Length: 274
Image 1 (tube, rainbow, N blue to C red):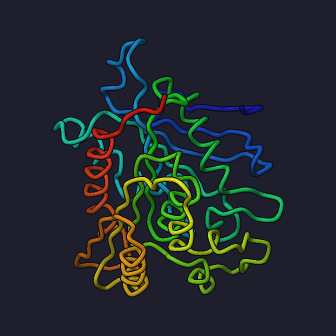
Image 2: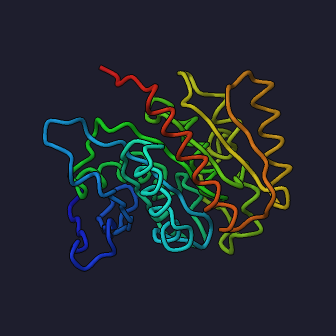
């Protein structure tokens, strides 16, 4: 799928982490992702099913290293796997494509940041990890702009995901306007491209399991409450929670555990498609 794919040497990388750079056809440039393979991945035998894959999307101004080196996502995942709270799984933490201050994970004129996440990142993770494949159950989560990406993509591609979650999520693309120096000219602007609620409500097949949360001091609290109300009105099943805290890593890293446990439960109930 990729003209080029480079993977860091495991002997020189932090334990369990692999830095990956690929030539993305969707973006027309090289792009980065960080993989986490738990210790248990080394015990997997060739005939066993591929490990589930969890995509973690960062927020504005971030990149592929943020979830690990600001949020400790790999440490949380390993602890939960070691305690049998979740099954062994691989984390894929991609950059958003590094457009301006943030791509929104949507299609732009000339670049498709949505296809990068939905199609290319899982394929790169499978090729680079050796323990995932196209048959791996797929979950997606994100924070802030990444929450917008994760929840919206769950609505746009419901057949691709077992579960989706957001933390402190942007719920409308317009909420990014004060954060992006470049503006959103050239971004896809259909309702399902610009609104989480529109994307989820327009899904034509069953949605994946959904969860999102927000801090009580978060600037997107009211937006998340509106999304919760909109989904209730539409009869869309989901979990929503509010917690003390604001828009920062202290909150996101703490409640990533809730999301991974939610994903673990969804994966246990998942029946692979024939």
